[in-house]
Image 1 (cartoon, helix red, strand yellow):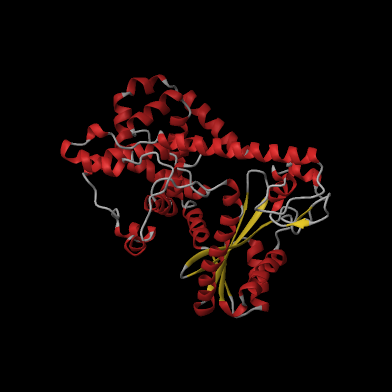
Image 2 (cartoon, helix red, strand yellow):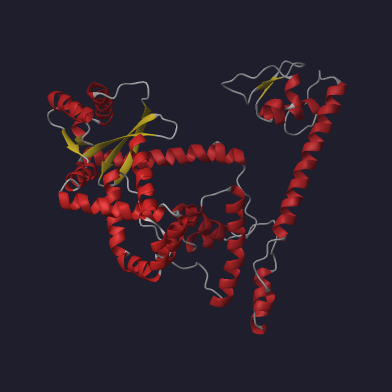
Length: 430
């Protein structure tokens, strides 16, 4: 339940209608008022100016609402004062860093550090200051720097605040590489001091709705491209950590790939008719005349769905996914005797090195903490990626063996065979 739903003011109003919670009906005067519970409490308290006072409200309730509004006002004032003090603690300029001839100019520019008022901009500023995207595209600041070294020190102090927010909020570090993050910083810089942060409600409701509408407008350009040049439907079936079978359906065109839908199908049988039904519904949504092909892997269920599609919609191709085809090629290549023997020997080396903490630590020391086993998307890709890794690090491995021949001599053949036996036992049970 939200804080507004728990507000004491609701005790003196009729239950709100779910479709329009902003309209509140008073239990005393039987009148309805817009503006939600905050405006209704002013009605009960008899505060003139924003809403008509209630003539039927008991004096006790009137005093209670007046005190409640006063407490709310005090809390708001305290919050604003705390925010002002918090902003006063932010200072990215160290006057000792600046030379004497710059001090006067810096003081005039930095005199309002910590001010809660935003920097005022004139009408001409709107035409002179570029948008955040334009500023990023130019690759330079809007205003000229005073001194590159001093600006670098200011940057170091500024990004400390940014980093601290990342740490406290648990934001992934790679979020800093997003273009939207750079646009946000540029927009804040152009706004100036005293920017009021968005409230959780603003992020959750109006801003989110606006972003959804902008995303829909962006996707419309993709849909226009589907109609003009055609598109491909791509399917991907996978199992998550909770054991659920999921299928993603995306659409690809020359503008890029856009998500269409995701379906949990754990309770369904993944046979040809089931997959064909899902793909066919996507084709109907996009328009059969706009779909050129359907792309999936070569699983038997997908091939059965391809035959059904070929019979019902002969003008649409069903193509195998290139990555899956390459994986099948690697599987066949791995069946050749020479390749198979090479992979087996490489696996013996990696099992031996990874089977002992001493040898594993030693290997990482000589390979600059790089692992030999490189996990790929599939089992066959992993084998060839590991072969490539061993080949690239062959000189380091030879040096390791030459410098530690005494140590390797103490590791008996029985230890090696035990490690291999354990490895293949795990493979057989997995």
